[in-house]
Length: 196
Image (cartoon, rainbow, N blue to C red; front, side):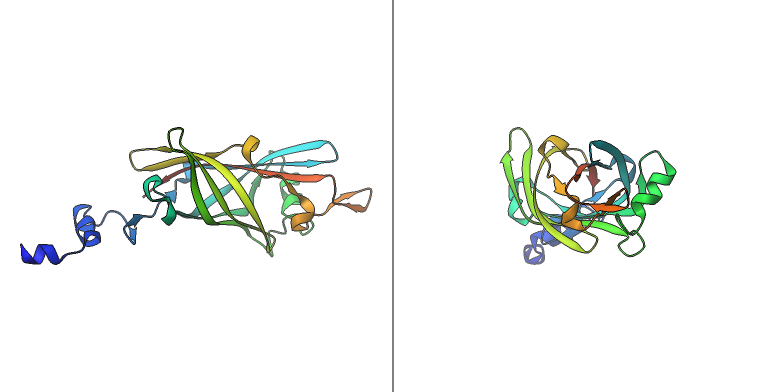
């Protein structure tokens, strides 16, 4: 009995779970499930709206609504996975004047603070930095969360999301050979199923 009392709560929990889960300071680390997660985007340029998706969502999520002060989200998607349904357009968006996939192969996001907005409705808010083409911008992102057997289903809708000007990340659009910044905007939408 004395030996058991000396074992810390984190060690006991790890023994109970038989090592099947990873821990950081007593908190589960969740990872995105590729087949059940999607990152969508919209780019509006001079009245034309382009829809697409980004794949290979990777990262780590520490999230517990009961102890949100320890919550943390780090995630990346690969620019090489851009899919708008049109091959030449995909390559154009991966080119140097847009996302420059060769030099900046991924888009990343890292939270600095997460708060619960409405526990009953499963709504939370994240403040953090998004990094596109080596440039960071601080954003505030509202998202919903639903507990599942193995983790959480998290979703952020376009209606609640941040609108970026392409100038923020030097996403240069050309019209008649001239660079255009002011009429290009970018929305990003995320649906993530994460498990431990």
